Each structure stands twice: as C-alpha cells, then as structure tokens.
Amino acid sequence: MIYLIITTCIHNKFGSTDSEKRKQHYINSIKQTLSLLPSNIKPIIVENNGLRQTYLDSFNIPVLYTNNNKNNYSNKGLNELEDIKAVIKEYNILDDDMVIKITGRYHVMDNSFFNKINLLESSYDVFIKFFNVCTLKFLSYDCVLGLFAIKCKFLKQFNYSINPASAEVEFASFVRNLNCCAIQNLGLRCCFADDLRILDV
Image (cartoon, rainbow, N blue to C red):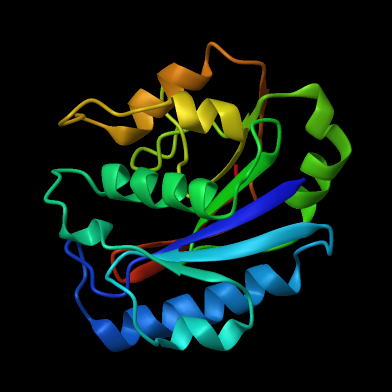
C-alpha cells in the first residue's frame, strides 16, 4: 500500500509566525495536493500541537494530532520525523508499504511524482531529489525533504543525531545506501519563510 503523510505544524517555532498566512498556505497547498492524488494512495495529515479541533479536520481525511512540537530540538526535522513515526505506529503502516512525505505548506504542481511511484514502487526503496534548496544546486549528499517517498521499514530505521547540522544532509547520507530513484523534477512548489517559489530542476 502507498500512504501520503502530510506534515503540519499550526503553531510554528521556526521561521514565520504569521498564523493567518500560515493557515492559508496550508489550506491552499493541501487542497492542491489532494486534488492531484491518485485514488490508490491513502492520505493522512499529522499535526504536532496536541489533540483539538482545527481547520485541518475539514479535509475529510484522517488527522493525527501529536504533542511533538513541545520537544525543544534545534532542527524541525527531528520533530517532523517523530510525527511521521507516530503516524506509522497509529495506522499500522507495514514495513514494505511505501510512505510519501510532503510538507503541508508545499504542494505538487502535477501528479508526475505520484505516477512515478505507482509505476516504479516495487523497483526502488526511495524516491528523492538530491539538491540543496538554498543554493539551488545538485549535491550528492543533500536533498529536498519537502517531498520524498521511502519504504516504511527504512523510515523506522532512520534517526537523526541529537543536533544535526543539516537534517537534509543526514537523510541524504542515509538513503544513499539504499536503492534510490533520483528525481530530476519534483514539480513541487515550496514556501520558504513568507515567499513561494517553484523548484523547477
């Protein structure tokens, strides 16, 4: 089975704290992604500020609320990984299931990434773009964490160091040992701070 985990954090500790702008990014991006999601892929939202009712419930897909934003890590990648692992446990995602992860404020511009996974899921362990989002250049040991897919068993194995210099570098280094499908064009629109820009390589 293939799952899409949409990671969200309504009350952000990193970067922009404009809650209304953040809300609109989430609503618009999640709607766009879900509109392009093939019917065989099961979407789940995870949010890490505790169990309560939020606007995320309006999408009519499962939402798991965790308390992981209370953890004071130096890098939001650690909180996000804990959220993903909480989803795996809660929904009993199996080791050989494929897990797609997308940052909730980002969205796909077309369904090519999903279609590639549907077509090649049995041939690869991971689908990822090796790329540095700051320099906008290919780097062998850096990656886009906003959108990737990986077999569940490898997500369960992976852990960041306590204070990683770069979550992207650590994850890229880990998956380089797996059977990777290196994606050239994610077709992903990213929201860095308060700006939107498209990763078009």
